[in-house]
Amino acid sequence: MLRYIIKRLIWMIPVILGVVVIVFTISYFTPGDPAAAILGPNAEKASYEALRAKLGLDRPFLVQLGTYIWNIVSRFDLGKAYITGTPISEELIYRLPTTIKLGVLSIFVTVALGTPLGILSATKQYSIADYSVTTIALIVNAIPSFVLALFALMLFSVKLRWLPIAGVATWDAWILPIACNSLGYVALSARMTRTSMLEVIRQDYIRTARAKGLKQNVVIRRHALPNALIPIVTVVGTQLSFVLAGAIIVETIFSIPGMGMYILSGISGRDYPVINGTVLVLSVCVCVMNLLVDIAYAFIDPRIKALYMSPRKAKAHKSPKTAEVA
Image (cartoon, rainbow, N blue to C red):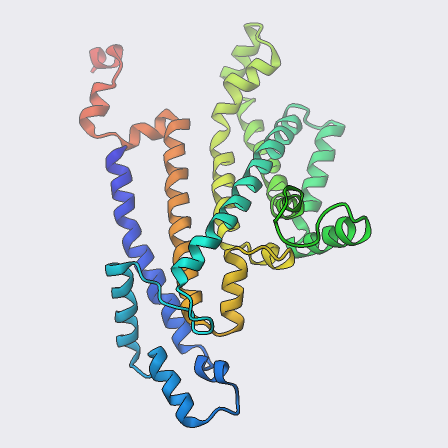
């Protein structure tokens, strides 16, 4: 297992480097000039050239790219924002916990609601509960997140005045962002759990467990659910990756000072260091989440863990009967 983790960590290096090169190249060749955007259309040419020299925009593309990568590798320096002049690393350190908190709480809601609903739908197949859960899941999954967020904001904040309209200064201000950020994944998790559970509960060992007289909840909890967890873990890992990388809509609508708001300000202001730095941090988070999901697979399914073992350990873990037959 340790060898696999080290191997995956090493493979993350070229992936992250490729993300840096691609995003930097797209930013460089994107139409528009940051210096002109900062100074405005009526700026003098001397001021314009001086600002370009100060920001390093007058240097060739390969020189700018090499300097940017070297600063990241040698000093973990993501540069400074063109408009505010503040170090990007400080802004990301301040904003990243908010986005992570939003993602973790959204995943908690997804697991707490989606998994039981999927189990209920699978164990009560073709019942009213099954049709209700499936229908609601399809409808919720088809609604775009920004439509859901705007509707919830208008209803619960503007009309009913039950919840704050913006920010996350109080605990109740988190309710709408978390709900809007997780409802789509609750529906997806419920559908995935239902499909996976239906495949598992038809297996012979489930029939054997029921034939032994075990209660339904014991059969589901001890025998069916552990073998149906891999699709559920996949959905959860995918959700956290999308929450970290795609929280722009929710954070913008609810004015949450997270990574989404920061990268949106960089895009609107042509602040390329902000865009590059934010995408780099998000790509690292996504790679780490994919690694954690793969490790979770090994703990859920022993057959997958056996694939990570070295041949010597795999031989040592053979059962005595298997070794004797061999």
